[in-house]
Image (tube, rainbow, N blue to C red):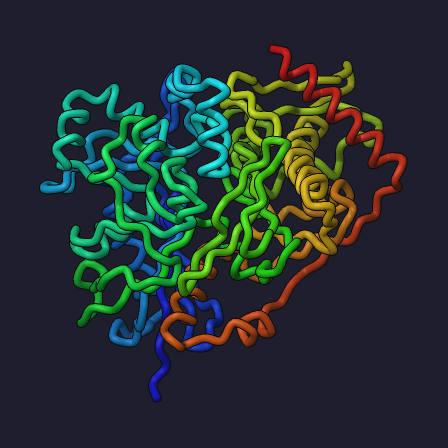
Length: 494
């Protein structure tokens, strides 16, 4: 029998990735095509959805050509995506009505405030598991319908399609025929009732979003139509999975049991704890979300997002000019004066869970005359670990469960300084997979399992990992955490 392959399209914040796995689920190759970051004067963040649509096929072509795999051997396609980011397009022409709004963007903050009152916030939380915030998709969509001329009328006539970026990717892969999303992405919109597993009339009415514009919600391992990758393949193959990027990391990193905790490091970082088949609603501002829905069975998770993690390194490089490349940040951090107590709070577009302050701004605190480049870089890297640790500690308070290990994935895991500091601050082993592309790999696993190509236990057994163990003394760890809490309190006052 000839070897077959699964191709995963991972539409991420910085670009579109194509990841190729063989018939045993082994990673072969990844290719990337970046897209522009549309940063406005007011700090708004957008993407060109048309550019992204073209890049889907460019990156698929590149990975097939570079791998040397015969196109007819591609057996399935899977989709992973940046969550909460939204696109709105004309159903007939497929033209986007405006730029897509990226998950980081808080342009809908005023709209959220106008809608928020104690009763509304309680209703939204009980139905969606999410706190009212411009971070989620619903307010972004409402902003588009309020601010882009003509969209409100078109939406009411059912002439527009609305979707997160998985939906936009599937729409383009299927020749502009299939308008679907999966339950994990739907649960991030703040329009989806995670109890009933359906779009919710009350929520859609609150944000004034016509339900006729929303995609069909399917299982994460469902059949999403057929694609020939824009003519790259000699025949069509099934798209047999769609999942939010962090959920894909969770699935492919073996976090499938109650209490398993993981973090997908990227532009932002998503921290999740598996809570099994029952949604656990937080008392402390942590979100409840659908981890995935497979075969009609839903797995839930507690979840919090750090808006700026990998993006902190980008800021150090492109804006502050404190480092020439990500690798240099590791070297500088290791050279920093151990006695320096500088902290950075990277609230460039507000700060999310568990603090939820969209008005917060970034700051360096605790600098002395001797604080220099190395100390500023180290403080920036440490800020990523502190934010993630805050979420792990919040999960522990909610569940009474202490993670035995903290599983992580993504580009920033290559930074040994950051990973060791993360292990020290959360005070448990940090487990890193051999390959950083676990979001796309997770989607490919879901597709391969659904099609009978892969066995989950076998997939887990063949994975290789690197582990960082805590080395910091407890007194120093407590002092550093106390300093971080103080820095946060000061920064959040402005």
